[in-house]
Image 1: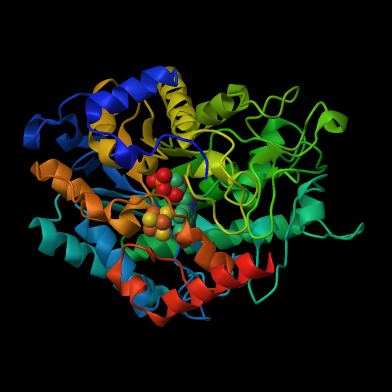
Image 2: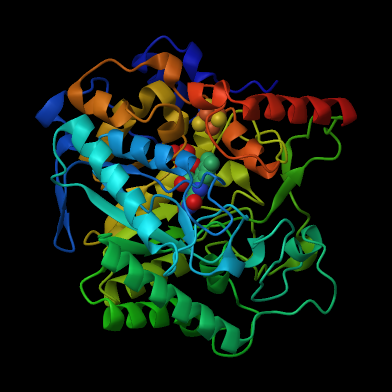
Length: 488
Ligand SMILES: Cc1cc2nc3c(=O)[nH]c(=O)nc-3n(C[C@H](O)[C@H](O)[C@H](O)COP(=O)(O)O)c2cc1C
Ligand code: SF4
């Protein structure tokens, strides 16, 4: 087991602050949580004419549990109801919803089209209704829908069917792509753009306040931004790599004027990581190390990456991207980082890796601090944009202290919560009401919500959410993990 600090074992916030100092991490942290309206987290914000009632945001999270035709299942409804009951007033996207079938990341991903329209409308209604029941009012509740095409990570049926924009020297090998595997043509890209616009129109008719044109985590929107080596209209210079965004936005402005637009962006990336073969043991992947890259310099396959040292972020192009968002009158920005497929410790800091991951190469608090640094730096440069920050779940007991300080000091506008919303969705409500945290329900980053879907099971919090814990799926997951350990 690694030697990183276990936050659950710390006595109190003073000890947590000592840990931050010892690790030399810049994470703002208050020593007292202010109750009710005195809290900066209870303040509303007005963005793009929308009033958002407090500073908690629910991050988008798929469940791999829709029907094969792209409709939500009862498990999807349950998750969205729980998002509604959280008390957070900004629901950023719900979950990634594919704009066309071949762009699904898994056969159970939701799809938005004329056939699924009514079901997605019911899903939104269920969230709103639960929010009303739990908090007494839907005032200030703002809900977006995340629109996606999974690009390189498309898996619409039971096997991967990557749709790539360029040849990647590392990721192509991981996906076993043969030498002449096709890249999407500019014509195919235009069809996908049309699908985004069609889906946005439907989302607008349903009553979503905004759509998120997803640009993160290695999926298609994100891959455009690193398409340095692609030729044609959508690759090469910055103007071409952002053409996809501009054309989608232009279409939405024409077809669904009045619908707000947001973008979730991987603000920086890093070279793919893999388990160190030297420290790997049967059933236990080694510590994460970067793929060898000396022969790939300057590195031209990552957005927001230092080309001379691809283990370092470089925010210069992401800043140009934000300037473009501003020019397009897009004010809602949600910053994430990296990808769950090739550098999960950057994207979702965790003490325990998913089954196909690697042992954390750094204290996960370093990963939290890195994402907070990126948001703070970009917020300073673009104070007029509204930012949602990511990767707060790992802070566990100390979320309220850090969230309050981060919003009060202007590091971010909204505190986004992902995994914690699967384990303990009422956390924002408890913080805002001044109730003590239910520490037994805190997500301890066991990563089962990632391991399960990587093995074909729905996602959910298997260790802490009774619904999953007591389901036959939990037994299946246990067998899978056990089998892996035995077989190596
Ligand atoms: C099970 C699971 C599903 C996720 N699905 C999505 C998704 O559909 N869209 C997205 O942008 N991010 C997705 N994410 C990433 C989260 O939104 C979030 O960025 C990440 O978990 C880090 O935040 P946290 O530390 O609060 O968990 C997912 C994460 C998990 C654990
Ligand atoms: S399975 Fe539960 S405890 Fe584990 S990372 Fe996911 S939400 Fe957290």
